[in-house]
Length: 399
Ligand code: TRP
Ligand code: SF4
Image (tube, rainbow, N blue to C red; front, side, top):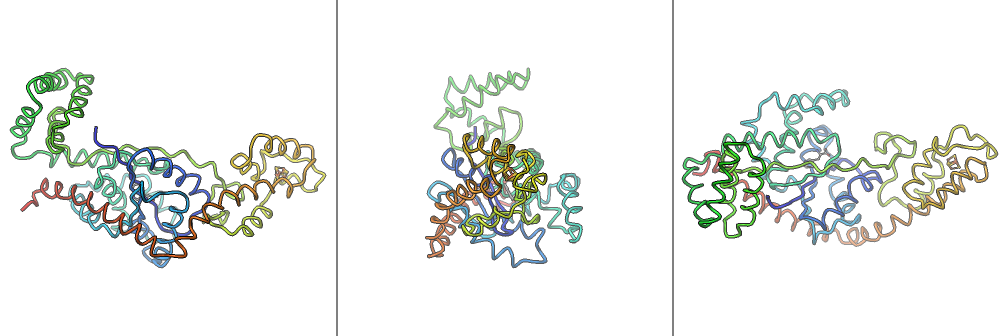
């Protein structure tokens, strides 16, 4: 297998809220200890829809990175960078645009959806149509194996896989691929080389998938092979050319259970958010004024928690005994709504304490954040440049 590597990005389009924290950031923090991770600010992506109001992007970039670090993204484990600082993304986007069928872009479900949703904005732009291709470039340029995304983005990953296959099919055939592959087989050594060829025949003649898997495993274990010979032999095994771009897998992020103050999905546009690093007084106020079960008009009226958005928060923030206290107290009118909300206020403020604390050092010394990002951009650029060397050569630009 290819080295495991996670890539994910987020658009800088405003402050992050608890939906982002519970839905995305906690997942990133978990992943960074499991695999090498790259997390980036997708500022060019933000421009595809916010091209007429660019100020929000600049305002959000650094705040967003601070939110990431505050939430526990650790620059010692993960590479944190800004898309527009790694120009190679644009080069790959351009080169792949030459071979990307228009129909594929038009068929991406978000294309029409978003145009309809944001009907007040002219999104019949070249950039907006090409947005999934830009996303593919982000992914393919790092040869990412896993891309954590929400369900709405899964078609983009499928699109990326198809593009990678198309690319490898078109350009993965070096002029003397056969010869080079046969040279590489020799480098495997007599016994392993012979076994490799047998497995190749079994797969290509009989479609034996087991043989394909064994062949791949054999290549993974052949430590002495150069990366480029290994790519050739993967390709030779499968009957395609050399693998230049790696097909990524979507790593589905569970939909966040975090709903907004009104019970709808938490989102800036619904005005129902609690932000990350929100002041404790503001958290208190927002929770105390949030709507409850509409049937519970007077304190003496019994309520039904499953009809109350406050209950959603209890399910995330409260332990079993507290939840039972809510169910019983609400249904018997034994507790008041403010009383019921207090454990949530306390838990949210407590959850945010270490986040606010971690953020403070970066707010006090903005140079620290810039240093993290400078370092991340440099590391990302190195990886991107490696891929671009292969891509340029494969597309006949190696002169
Ligand atoms: N399209 C993603 C979003 O709108 C952001 C994004 C851009 C991304 N490039 C990516 C996510 C690459 C994962 C991988 O949220
Ligand atoms: Fe909602 Fe709690 Fe009031 Fe019941 S007691 S209506 S669960 S806030």
